Length: 138
Image (cartoon, rainbow, N blue to C red):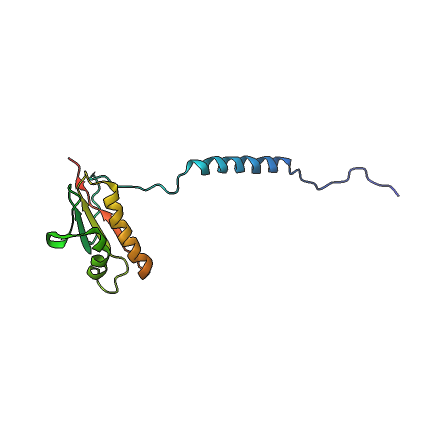
């Protein structure tokens, strides 16, 4: 018998594939450290945005850190959650709470309103959101 010397060998080289995988791994490790997932995005008091939302409840904060609700009724920040619970229509799961704050108001006052809404969402299983109202840019 005569054996042929030209036999076809089916093999694949995986060295280039492993190089590619390691390069992708390094790329994703570097880019994931540059992303800050906990960054809070705030809308500034002046904006070019024309987005309008159907407001359910409006909360006002003036430059003296006083909180007001509909019809200029003063309210203590600790009672804000109770007021929002009663003001949002029964059965409404996605209400918009519009926050109209003076541009000199510290972020902590804004966070108090957001915390009150988040507490309502956590206990009631709702998806209410806080919208920071802005004035048109001059």
